Length: 208
Ligand SMILES: [Zn+2]
Image (tube, rainbow, N blue to C red; front, top):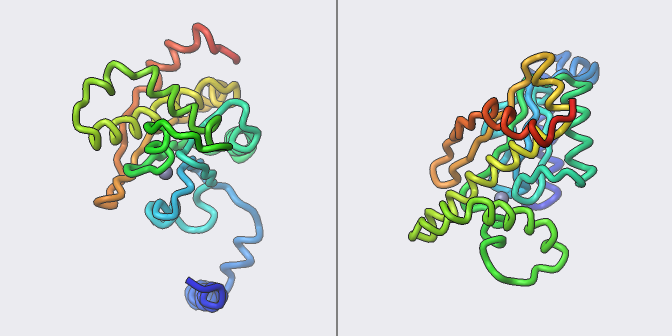
């Protein structure tokens, strides 16, 4: 994909939008009120809006390596606070994907430089669920399961934040864990029972 093509595509995209609605960009410039916050992986194959069929203005998006929600990451925490407190999204989604390079890297013993502290958070997920994971003999299946458990733990990290706890209590904000199956294109809802987790973790992480 060369950069000349990008600008040509952009021109075509503008024309397509204007053909349907001549006012399209005027309305887009008036502001946003997305109902979804999507936290996903930076992987080039997992295109957040496209796989959900979402249009501009519908989804607030944050992507990083392996869709992590880390409490000292100012970037993800700012996104969460802005989306929950100001945009008042109704749903927060953590979306992982099978064949995630970040998760794979965390399963291997290699020094990856600056990625070490980032991936260590995934190694922590492995440690928490070591029993279940080590019982899976097939390596590919163990890898898939770690992707799912990582999504689950990032959802738990989400509900440890004050903004999310408050919005769940005050206006019924919902947190969801999904996995994108890169081999079939299917979006899978892990149906994580976050009410149960919230009750459980609030004993220690109750902030609001
Ligand atoms: Zn990934």
